[in-house]
Image 1 (cartoon, rainbow, N blue to C red):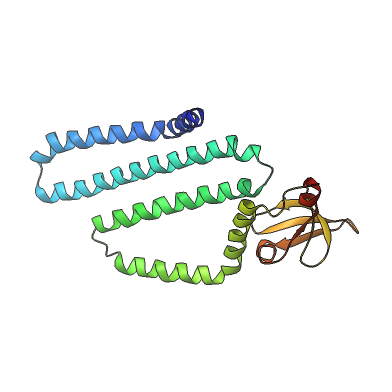
Image 2 (cartoon, helix red, strand yellow; image 1 turned 180 degrees about the horizontal axis):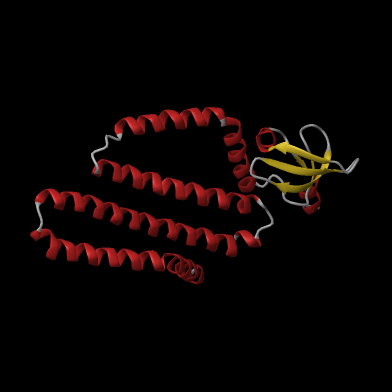
Length: 214
């Protein structure tokens, strides 16, 4: 556990080093402005400059957080995902990396906009409605992704296992994907692709598990 913690720490430090240096420089500049420049300028100019400096500060913090998450995902990909037989985590890591990046910058934007007097209540309402519409339109995709997670956790079958599908075919497990899984038919060597949701809701007969118990 201690070795894993050290590896994660090194990966985060490597990814976040440059953003942290930039952040510290911005803090120094901000303090210099606040102590030396602000007392000598007008209040109106001070308020304007303060908005831009705060925006730069928030942007720097968001950049640091993004890089830290990137370090965690990189460590997981190289040290955990590369050693597992399932490709589910390999396919999900890029998606989660992009999702976290988008989420971080959306939050940063929602913090920055009120600084410039923008009312974000209507914007948040619009985003909520849009998110609901997207979720409804992609509910089958989301359900299949969740089912893929459940298959990875419950492990009703593994790569290479011989199983019987709900449709009756006896197959060999080739791949457990994010939305669909692939199987090789034992009868005609055809590739059968089944949505994960269908697999999670149906009875699966696993011959390999039975042979391992003998």
